Amino acid sequence: MIFPENFVWGAATASYQIEGAVKEDGRGQSIWDTFSHSPGNVADGDTGDVACDHYHRYRDDVALMRELGLAAYRFSIAWPRIQPDGRGKVNPQGLGFYSRLVDALLAADISPYVTLYHWDLPQALEGEGGWTNRDTAYYFADYAQAVHEKLGDRVAHWTTLNEPWVAAYLGYGNGVHAPGRRRAADAMRSAHHLLLGHGLAARRLRSLGAENIMLVINSAPVLTPAQVNDPQATPDAADAAAVHRIHTLLTRQFLDPARHGSYPAEVLEAAARNGGTDHILDGDLEIINAPIDQIGINYYNPCVVEAGPGSPVDPAWPGSEDVRFRTADAPTTAMGWPIVPDGLSRLLVRLSQDYPGVGLMVTENGAAFDDVVTDGRVHDTDRVAYLEGHLREVHRAIAAGADLRGYLVWSLLDNFEWAEGYRRRFGIVHVDYETLARRPKDSALWYRDVIGRNGL
Ligand code: GBH
Image 1: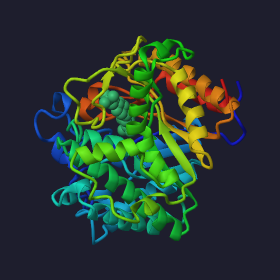
Image 2: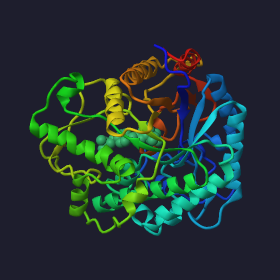
Image 3: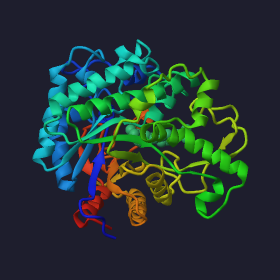
């Protein structure tokens, strides 16, 4: 099973999940510092204070990437390292770190894929309303410019946002993520301002000469329980409506504005019933509809729903009043997430049809399992099976005509898994949190061979 020539193989991480060094070189506070240090928010009271100490160990980590043969490394930039207050003065030391990282990657023949926002908003901006405040979108574009001015001569691949659905609905809706606010109306407003920030930043980057601009979303095929194991199953009208509703809230809410310049009617109706639509101004959709080059898809599992009232409605899902969330009949990972590899091909084929004219990339895919170290090795056969199963589906989607440009494993390293802390391990490289030693798991060695062969 050979992949196309120039197919991009890589791995992904995010700043707060790996860097540590939260008080070094002038870094300001982010909402994840505040949130993780407030008791009750993160499992075991874990924080990103040290994380994988990547800030100090990045050279070793790049050497490891080179050994694995990665062609691309997707990482994110901590906005509060660049602008400690979220706006105004730029911190040269913060830019310096990413500049050294980029140089190390290029010297190792690895293309840097820079994500500008993977959830660590400067706390100073949260103090002014965070993403519920429209100004944040404009500050985000200024920040994007500051980063591009330093790295634009060497970085060819730019991502504005990682998973705006998660940032808005888990951050401001059900409060599972920072900043831990819990109001459906705030989440819907934040979603719009994140999209506005995406559009402003994409336009700004383009005006500065950037050529490969991407928006990364967490998407999923939305399926009825019967469809999980039988793609041919045909839901009745009520179940089909529930499926369509959740697909609209999860995926169309972001890609319709970004690619078609319009919101789905169902999203506007949900906003009207949750705080109103006054925050959506004339001209916003035109800004959001900025030209982009790729859509990044982070896929972990399908979303399984059927008709019937969810009780009570999760503030992460305003507009889902007639929908009941179900669990899939499938084996699960340590996160409790169902393993449904062909969900990925179903999703990719659909998105390539609904949103033509841009490349697609799997920007995250992977799994947490309860890894054990035995005799210095981690025999993570479950992770190898997960990755292999999903790569087969990527190949299948390409054969079906989807314009897939690459695949990035989540994650290079075990890391700070947000509200789950360090107890959930997604890495293909094991991290010993006592010594911070790295140890490639069997999955890393397997992935190296896949890359070497350009296929399975
Ligand atoms: C990604 O997000 C992140 O980008 C990454 O930082 C993270 O470490 C990685 O995945 C692993 O978690 O149906 O309401 O229960 C995860 C995307 C979206 C997956 C929300 C779980 C559950 C939504 N997540 N989804 S709900």
